[in-house]
Length: 262
Image (cartoon, rainbow, N blue to C red):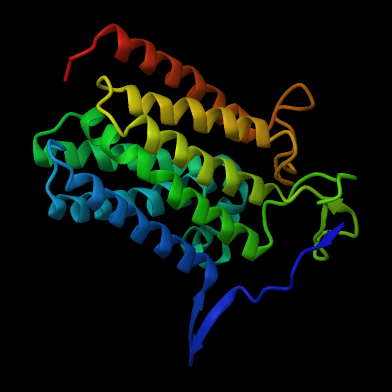
């Protein structure tokens, strides 16, 4: 049995200014995405300029932050938002929805594509392999914040979160950092190392993320304000991830059926 380390969520205090680890994890994720994108852009025949990666990251960061926060409010805490609308802006307290962030990024990628004369999936196929690094960093931020803990377990790596109770629980945010971060990055980086059909990389991202998130939800504690959505076991995360799995399969089938289409 492990005990959750008592980590101060504030990394640095400069007078009235407090820099939180949660925000730093997002910054690390964005910088890693920029670096990896620049590496791929420099490859011969990539079709991308290195300076375009910075612009793409700016669009993507706005999509993540705005979509992630708005999605969290709509999907998980809409009633609280109605009582306290200003909660929407208190991002440093945690509370970001991946699925909301994904929708925000979709809008951002579409806008960036229009600006640069690229199709939506040309942009997402390029961007998808780098996203898991940001996801993994975000989940480490969740761990530092002591949020999104798992259900009780008797496994030897069960972790006690003192702010919750004295029961050992799955450190589900670390499972997600491993699967949605490291494992998904390896899969997509290797898969996209050689040219793939149009939409295929995007489809692989949707499929694998959906599967990983759906699986981890079985050991992640459902949000207290929501509980189980259906059948006494379906969570909001699973409800939002299942369409991703189907859409990922659809994109992969379409990609390999229409090789060469742009």
